[in-house]
Length: 256
Image 1: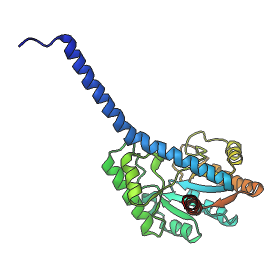
Image 2: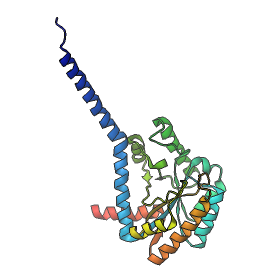
Image 3: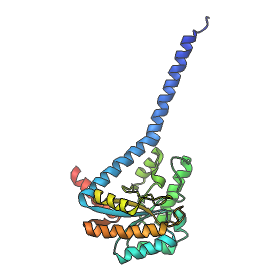
Image 4: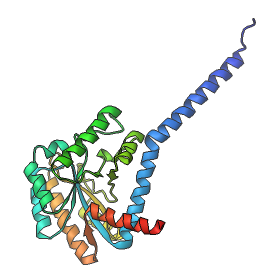
């Protein structure tokens, strides 16, 4: 039996590599890109809906904590505004009194997972456990277990399917002031974006573990300015659950 020509070996290797790259591309698309594209589609749809109806939603992640959440609740109470809080399960267990106050005063309490694992960086098993445990923490204290905001806004195909299977509402945002970073956006830039969008879903954080040393002051002053702007521009401030209720009703009417 003669030796296989070098050219044939190279062609075979090239074919195997091509198949491998194609399979890898398909896996990457469905594991990472498909959930990402779905997120962008949902964000645009919600942004358009908010703009059409002049709806504004105030949302807060990574809390609760006494330093930020307590004065924030005081401010919201004074202005008679309801907001949506996506809490970490490990923070709920440490701040049950604050969480109960939040719920009693009519705000949304949804889940932001238990320990804020990044679905794009951690192994699937711990991520699924983190999501499930966070939901149980919210449920145990009387929050809305169907409201879920993925940590870092990251989902894989597995976490996407978990959300769909369990009837979770993945709660995105349309306006991110970057308040968890060292140099957040200026208040005027955030307010201008709200004016342009005629509302939207604002992402902020009620946590004190950020490099921005003036974070609490930044959040409180921005929220006050946002509420003032909403009154001036006739924007209706809703909770996330209220927004979803209106949004789903509209979709039902369109499909009937």
